Image (cartoon, rainbow, N blue to C red):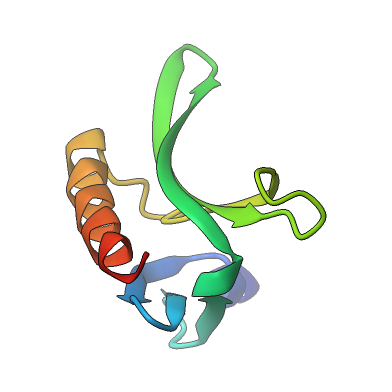
Length: 107
């Protein structure tokens, strides 16, 4: 049980976008442990709202599309955001619009 709390139970997640630098993703776990990932803006193709079907429900999630270095118009991978908190679509739309506004200023 203690291992579950330390490695799995996420207390909160944050997304920080600095238009000229990149995107920082942070997760704080219930145990106090934190995990941070930084993605350079030059590697980011776009941020989108995607949908998935799980059982009998549609799940919406925000994700970062990473550029494919071999093919300029291609996508090499997808990085899902807010995996643990699973915000509703209306919250995702607000975050998406803010992301696009910040990223639009640097393009």
